[in-house]
Amino acid sequence: MAAIFVEHTFTRNADTVWQRIRDFSDLSWLPGVTGCRVDGEGVGAVRTVSTVDGGQVIEALTALDDQARTFAYRIVQAPGVREETDYRASVTVTPSASGCTVTWQATFNGGNAPQDKVEKARQGAEQMYRVCLANLATVLE
Image (cartoon, rainbow, N blue to C red; front, side, top):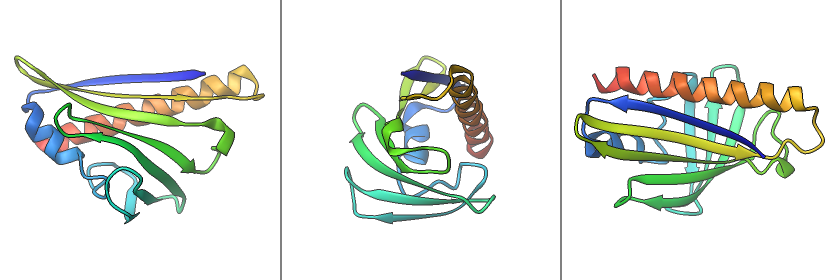
């Protein structure tokens, strides 16, 4: 399994950051997203995310815990992601003395793909998470 782990420190308190990102249907803080439609509510809801390049990503909410300030999802369908990839991710907001830290992590199965391609995909996702969290910091200013 390939693993992705990204953290970003925020000066805003954990509740403020959590309230900004917890809504499964609001991805306005993500760069490159042009639309988001959600079918269902709570755990089990499925969102279809439209991207600036015309692509679509379908994700299912697998966990949501407001008290722990965390949610998890799996990618159901996306360009380059097959069902057997089993791409699962979570986002957690952890309070700190000076604000909070957001951790975005994921795992996926590279299957029979060559290791260099799996690593390239892992690095691409990691970079995307970094860009998204940096954009969130800008949105929160």
